[in-house]
Length: 331
Image (cartoon, rainbow, N blue to C red; front, side):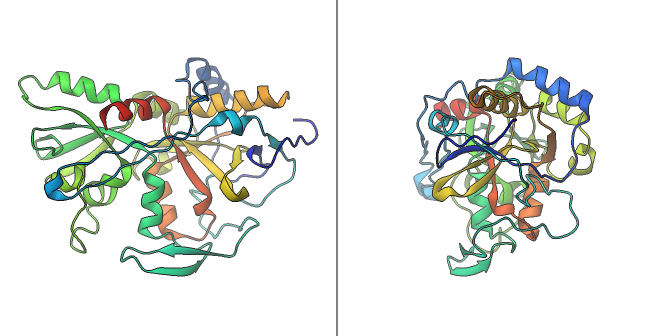
């Protein structure tokens, strides 16, 4: 992009320096071509910020679930493009050393699992509540039995990133009376069901995790098309086993959020990333080259958040818009 274009205080902006594994040029061409069949992540820009909630079994307590749908109408109308480095990686997921801190506060006020508030260095490991807040933006789908628990077969329960995959699984369960597709968010299930952590410290909250058999195995089924794209992208094999659900970032794509804070988006659908880039390119009236695509996994990102040492607090998950809309209908 030529020069610098500043149209407002908030908005998307391009940053110039990102480390990590990237897609080769041939893969980037394929990824760009794939954006033509995207799910309309930015087509729904008329949507205002929204929240969806669900009250589950009252006997187990009420758990409110929420997801935010960003309003990109205002965001894309205020584009900031910069040509200098900011010293922060969009996905420093495989870096062995501490990351350079971006400009901003040196400390952050956090709340731990016991509800205690304290001041920590901005580069310290994130607390469980901090990570849970990030995960609450990602909807997942599952088959719920009559009791409200996750349907289990041969000691294993499945969660799906795609609502369509959950529906197909339901069709395969002939005779499973009372079972239907349901939705929750990743913070509900990641630690108690997927990772089996924190089960003895405090009672599990109501929700899919609170109603399900904690002794069973649970795993997340990613979208097959996202895995196919990831397999063509350098760096995927290194993170595929750490919770193998792909997340995507562009080397130079970030945005400013509330309080003028920088946020680095991680998309669960690469088509959404490309649509965002194309829209930014159109709005900016530029001739920017195709973005350099980076891939990691949700599990690897969470591991990084737990380790600390970088600007992991600036990362934000952006879920597939179709998944959010389908979850709204189920919650």
